[in-house]
Amino acid sequence: MAQPRVQSEYPAVAPGVRDFIGGRTRKMLIDGKWVEAASGKTLTSYDPATEEPLAEVPAGEKEDIDRAVKAARKAFETGPWRRMTASERGRAIWKLADLVERHGEEFAQLETLDNGKPLAVSRAADVPLVVDHFRYYAGWATKVEGETIPVSIPGQQMLTYTLREPVGVVGQIIPWNFPLLMAAWKLGVALACGNTVVLKPAEQTPLSALRLGELLDEAGIPPGVVNIVTGYGETAGAALAEHPDVDKIAFTGSTEVGKIIMRAASGNLKRVSLELGGKSPNIIFADADLDSAAIGAANAIFFNHGQCCCAGSRLYIEAKAYDTVMPKLVEYSEKIKLGPGMDLATEMGPLVSSEQYQRVTGFLDSGKKGGGKAASGGGRPKSLAKGYFVEPTVFTDVKADAKILREEIFGPVVCTIPFKNVDEVAKAGNDTTYGLAAAVWTKDIAKANRLAQTLKAGTVWINCYNVFDAAAPFGGYKQSGFGREMGKAALELYTQIKTVWTNLGPH
Ligand code: ADP
Image 1: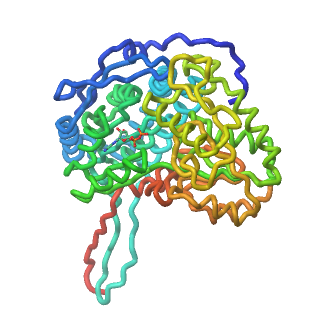
Image 2: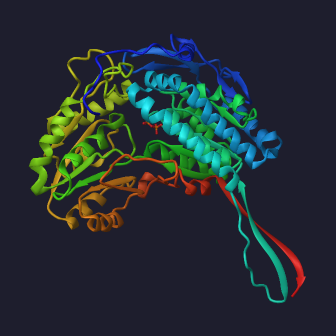
């Protein structure tokens, strides 16, 4: 989020994008066919920068989920997918990465139109991360291995080994903050391990997943292996979570819905993995490089408009550096250029939806009523009449029990709190029901690593923030969920172990 180098400028609309905008009605993917919802109902996807409709997509419900699960089951049990070699599966995932890369501009524009994020970000972050992610898991397809086990049975020789087998039919429910990237996080590993999938994109942002669905056939992924059912959470999502023939449900979204999913999953004891909310502490010590720390703190919260589950929304600054860091942070925040994501000069776009706008501005009101002071931002930018825009906001004077300090806002709002020493900040940092991420800024690397061990979070960044790589596991402690996505760790979620014993006769 440096100062914009370009004047206000819009790109030419990429050719494939036209089919997904202008109020067109799209279909969803079940068993390799593009279909409407059984009910014929549709839902509207909006452009959050203009508040205008973009496209209609099917509003899938239970009957559609049933159809999709049936297709995924057939593809898992009897389809060509299980007969393909691991190498062939890997190559199909790699090809999918190539195709996303080839259509990169199209995906970047769809993501920006549907979600609101700046095109510069979709181009530089979302799309390349998706491509890398698929390539990373393409490599794992040939490395999903069991073990031989040295058992000790008196008088008997045994050959005992484990097979690491796919879990089966997997339901995947994803959010709207990184629509295509979340689809890739879910699909890459599931396919590498040989599962079949029913994917439900968020109702706010279904377009890039549907476009991805159009590339599956060319990538060599057989019909029914990936089914994409668009629809609302309470209908399509709920039907998937409780479906008796789904073997595993993977969910990324709010902690509240995570709990609902877990309950729904109990009917057939399907496996569950949850990547949920956060209220991540970002800790700046006085001995840090304060310029980088202040910029890092701004990016920690304002990247993707604060719509990141790992956003650094609680900023702890060592008291003796507070008056140095704050002006830098405020100055940086005030310079961020808000505008429609499609404008190449834009550094921060609108929030994703009207609902999210209401939610975040509600938190701003509650913060101010509770005695908090907005050192920058604090409301809607006056220059933008339409769209769900909220200013980057830095709060000071926040009380320890304030809602804005304790609850996940999922918007560009940070609370700043001074602290005196390591023990105090470790305690404050951990004083939350969440545990997704944390960060420490200091030149004292031993102090940073000791604190990293104390912080109860699934990721700790030291002198950096929001760094991701397909090889590095990501997931939550406490009510931020369980199960790790990315890296080798994610294979655990999408495979199960079978132990095979062979009697080789007496010793
Ligand atoms: P947000 O509140 O930020 O929109 P959610 O956790 O509600 O985040 O949504 C994340 C995903 O979960 C979306 O795909 C949404 O449709 C889905 N979802 C919402 N409610 C339910 C539910 N009751 N059961 C299953 N999925 C749901």
